[in-house]
Length: 121
Image (tube, rainbow, N blue to C red):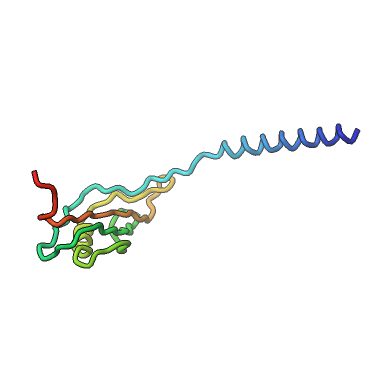
């Protein structure tokens, strides 16, 4: 008798978990539309520099996609300023969450190679 009760209890638990899992699956996913770049300005390699590498910037955007801040994630002394100047002129579409505009951040990387070091055609 005890074994029968344990089996019935285990079956009830499994059925209950199955019902719970099907309820979880019925919740629709939240819709997030990330910000997007709609206009760029090319960065100009500074003529006095001989550095190479990658500058990574995190751009903070308001609800309308306007730049409200730029944070240097990875910089290079003579190349960070030209990268920041370039990205300040970019245009963005703002992010949306559930169809409503929201502030957001987007990360961008600029790879610099001195003009004399690049591939020769």
